Length: 488
Image (cartoon, rainbow, N blue to C red; front, top):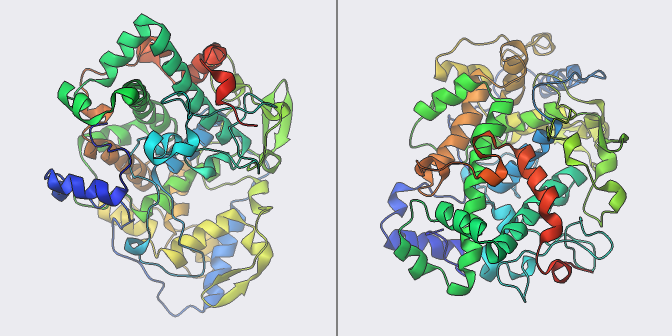
């Protein structure tokens, strides 16, 4: 909050940080970077042989019988939501090679919920009420549970990607509702007002609030920080343990397994390790009342009818519910991810045209982006850097005389062979260290609020994302001015 200067561009923000003497200690936030040096394709193998090896590797992952893993099914989409909070690469494309330092990260690489709040009421006024200070727009007349939309059906939200499927869209909607619920309760309930104030003002001097925040946005800023702290706690204590071995998380909290001066958003994370979520996707999901739909029948970017509203207890454990489970992390993917319906153009690699049928395979796209666009280190190279035992390359590669494993696949291979369906080793170290480092570098994060405890209204120390969703469902009818926050 104390580093939020409403109405300023991010360049202005950086200038202000410089004037305050802080910029020198912070990494430049607007580009990606590398943890390890680039790893270009070398050797005597022909482009066709290399392409055939990667196609064989991608095809080996296809499975028609996914099993249940540790994590609730909704955590896959919460992971997607978190990704959309901290990364957006709008430049790179398969078939071109880019230096990650030239790729702008459009999102702020901080767990600050800018996919919900944008740049605040002054910087992103189109997602806020004009009449009621600090309230976010939400709902439509035809479906009060849908996102607010313009007359073309486009969602009025901080990151348009959070409307790309109906599950992440409703997680986005739940956080918007959560904000509006708490705004309403702070206005009308003394206990909640005190609880939010006491939590939001932790670790920030009172004069900062008075000097930086306009009076008409004081409630908004306190609610926003209150939600941010709880969200960061969820990332650390709910999302990470769902997908990363706890021993790896504990190790990353104690010591950065890479180094203290690395990029805040490395492509090894955004382009490989954090793409583990693709391996946790189910081919079908039950939305509510036993109504199951195929993965790509849940596409978004359009007005949502009430039939597509989900029951959150089908995706998260709520009040003893038995939700669907994400598939365990491993070298496997649902068949539907090999027929991406929105891909209509051919894919190119090493001068070869691989055709549309290959372009529709998400596994292959990930591998080619890893090896052709970002030139990422192999899994074995990262393991060597971390001084842990290396896994041998899979047969699909060695049959084509390729001896090093693309980093994305290697992270999944580790999880399947050594992690019991959770990231460990290389993959766990990258994912845990990047998310934890983001929190360590943010002086206002939950890691720098030693007295923070989750709010009793969310379940106290037993808080989970499921309990947050249950809180929203219980109170969504209590939002003040709800009818005036909707779009047409």
